[in-house]
Amino acid sequence: MKTLQKNLRKTLTRDEFIEKFYNKSKSSGSRTVLLAVLKKFDSFCTEVYGQDSESLIVELRGDLSDALYNFLQDFVNYMENKELNPKTIASYFSTLRTFLRSQGIKISSDDIKDLIRLPEIIQELREPLTKDQLKLLLDYSKPDRKALYLTLLSSGMRIGEALSLRKKDFDLASKTIQITIPGRFTKTKQTRQTYISSEAKEAVLRILEEKQDDDLVFGKSENLIMAKLSEERTFDNLRKRCGLTEKYSDSNRHKVNIHSMRAFFHTQASIVHDEQYANAMDGHQGYLMQYYRLSPDKRLELYLELEPSLLIYQHTDYHKSQKALQTKVQELEERNKELMNLKDDLDKIKQKLSISEKYQKD
Image 1 (cartoon, rainbow, N blue to C red):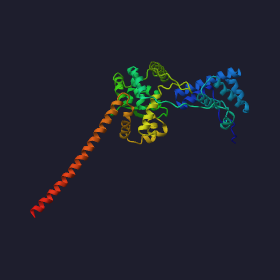
Image 2: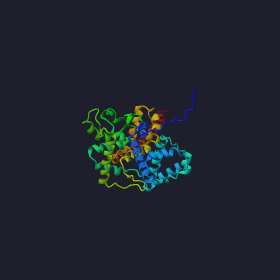
Image 3: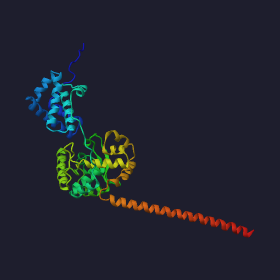
Image 4: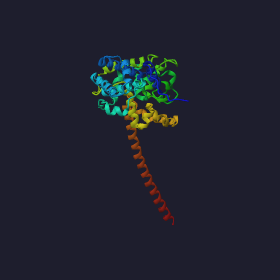
């Protein structure tokens, strides 16, 4: 006869938890955050309780009363004293809760709401990148980085996605370059396609000419984490040269950062089309299915309608030419109306002449 099992979940070692956490998201960024949380947790245990984290976890498994929630509040207070911003504290707390659950310590959501005080998150409005700022950044960039930045701001790609691209992912047969981002490098783990502007195309073609099919186009390393860190350092130096070093008051984040280019694309796509289209192009999972129901020709058509808003150097001339064309069209329409009026007058005169000739014959 079968008996009830008391322990359905086995506790995980720290290494097992890290591996499971990474395998679920396949995100190197998430893994980096997890390691930072565990490091902060270890420091907290040593500095506040004078014990290592493993010993304290064993104690907490045996006591699920107020001691657990006092311990968790102490961790929140510790992070506040270390001047972590409220959003980071909330993120670290959530990650620690997941880790403690893997250690056999269950924490009630209702109890967290009732017993844990998290700092209030007050977020300053995010400022969009202007085309003048983008032009400044591009003007101070080396040709290969300029090609990367033009690609980011005209495609909606994440920096990690762009650094993973190889020459074979670029389709040059279309009216503009179409890029296929392999699913293993996207956040949703779904392969998706996007396009780049004519400005980006011109810069990228120079790089592609010197590459083999399996060569990385933008990435400097096969190690994606190292490649992203390298790009962050490069962009930080660029930002300093351009004098764009201002930060938000509610965090340590710069107002101008490498991720702002993706945000620029999203804003332009939302204005020209709508939020749904922008989210699909950004690679947000809930919008991709409907977007890919459109035919390839329709998807390209939508992008070509958006492209003028993504141009940095040509946009002034483009809008001037558009305005000139609109003026010309209006002039031609007015002349056409005048001609139509003259035609009507001519028809009336012909009709009167015809009637007059008829009476003369009679």
